[in-house]
Image 1 (cartoon, helix red, strand yellow):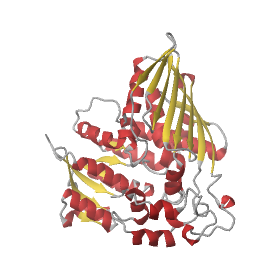
Image 2 (cartoon, helix red, strand yellow):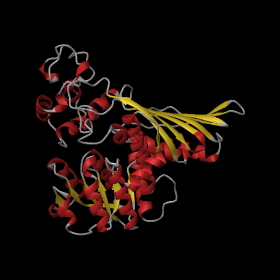
Image 3 (cartoon, helix red, strand yellow):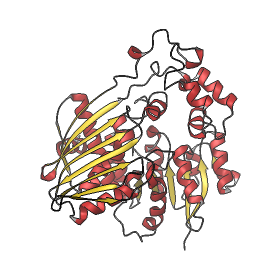
Image 4 (spheres, one colour):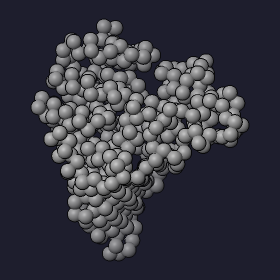
Length: 424
């Protein structure tokens, strides 16, 4: 068995997650270099994978000056830092595992896709829902014809009260100028999965969404800039930064706010006293929406509604309605997939489990993409979960069109939108 050599660029949560799974399959993968500016994160990768000092970098540029030293580059930097290292890696002939979204702009998505095709390299985008048991089973059910021709789909992404506040208000993805718009950053997963399940092209999109709650208009009367300064709703606010980050010793959130792999209480206290993670949830610099709905018309008049909302427990909920039956499923608890047969009027229940959360591995999707990646890179993959870069680019362009529809308050013809991008 050939061992594939891997370079990691960006050792935050996502990059660390993928390479942690790779470390458990040493016969398949070997991480040979890392580029990460934050010492704590870089040191963790160095020690876990036994990487020599001269293969540990604070920046990807000197790493790439060595030429092609591995088979795969994982790029798991912030959204706006995807394009340049990805293009350089493609130029060097690397295959890529690229964290979603591809890039924050449609023009860059098209340019990167064209470069990958021209250089004959494989680029796998980390739309990890494709590799969960639940969505894989739904794809199997649809393709089997069990529910007949798909007519309508309702799909919901429950971001979750705390997850939204942590990542999309206080966090790095709360401001679209630093990261990307909410629909792209959080929900390109979902637009992609809908495209994959239905297996047809989207024709028209319409969208509504707003930042309605997490703003200064809703701050409690008399609330300070930082939670630790003594808010009148200190004991009852579900977003109290002291309780979330200091009192709760769970490492994922604490690592995220401090940029340290093993933060101490002192590290956390310093952060929530002086930096945005400690600010009142209603007084941050966030500008992304906190709820959004997208209406989509696919080929064959298939209608789809997708809703993303902060105001839920974490989870994904989907109803797929066909001419012979109906499927309902939940990613986020242990509810079975329910398949209704319209002929005999009976339900079939298919056991299904797995957490929807990042810390829960996206219902098995995080490990699933790594497990699948090896066969794909070796030319031995026979499944249908991995999209080509062209397919990933297309679902991203549908997402961009939907966001444009929201901003312009109009229905957008997707093919016309894409053609205009490619000719301008």
